Amino acid sequence: MTKKFFTIVLILLFIVPFTAFVGCGHETRGVKCSPHCTYNDMVVGFIQTGSEGGWRTANTASFKETAQQLGINLNFYDAQNKLENQVSAFRNFIADPKVNVIILAALETTGWEDVLKEAKVAGKIVVLEDRRIDAAENLYAIYIGSDFTEEGRKAGREMITLLNDSTKKNVVELVGNVGSSAAKDRGTGFREAIDGSGIVITESQTANWSATEGKDVMAAFLKKSKDIQAVFAQNDEMGMGAALAIKEAGLKPGVDIKIITVDGTAGAFKGMIAGEINTVIECNPLLAPQVYEAALKALNGDALPKWVPSHEGVFYQKDAEAILPTRKY
Ligand code: GYE
Image 1 (cartoon, rainbow, N blue to C red):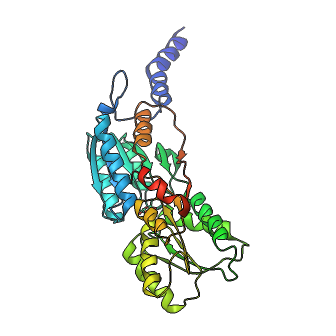
Image 2 (tube, rainbow, N blue to C red; image 1 turned 180 degrees about the horizontal axis):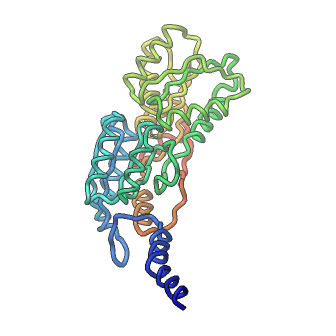
């Protein structure tokens, strides 16, 4: 009797509470809302890349305007395209007890594991918007952004069509900021699609999403050789810069040298209407409604898919004039 009694006491005093503690190893979210969280409970720390062009301007506007409409408390940070600024802002939002959701548009795919682990310990929800990163999936709630690889494939398929009747198929590539998922994946997809087509990428260089740098890099390519049949510009601004360089070299952009860009900003549509840009691959910047909705679900502990790719199309010169008035950015 005595031995049995003490065994039961031991179990009740030590083993049960320990098991209970270990057994409830679910995420300890730092968020307290009852009975459930609403947008009014959401305090967001948003870390933007910078303000490098029309796509980014539209992306930022989407988050600011939608936060106002939904009653979300938005703390917006512009990293001015510096990775170190993004990492320090991330840590500041982790340290801010009011912030319960961190949204990141990552400048580069690597270097995020440590801050993501710190955010998890601090019970912050992390949502990736626009750019994907190389990190363990359990370190963030969801990634909402385009399938950049498919955008690259679309550009490659359109390039094959554009150069179909051209005996020579030399293409130069203007790349976004090195290390970003958009730049890496668009390049991968483009190469996949043109493989075996006879198209040769004779030059590839970063122009950091910028029209000015796009013009300078394209001018350098043309100085080296004018035997170029087309440009794959990984965003509109670099494509518009390339068109200026082509004109200054005494050639006709869109005719002597074809141009394909990615994004679908108003500038690219005007370039297509002017006959200087041939084809534009759409990349949707208006992601805020989807992102905030996912963040609220995560705050309430709902299960989420790890990635929701945006649905996007391709725009052609012949349709540009009719479509431009309907565009939001
Ligand atoms: O294509 C470019 C911007 O991440 C999809 O970043 C975005 C890219 C976009 O600078 O214009």
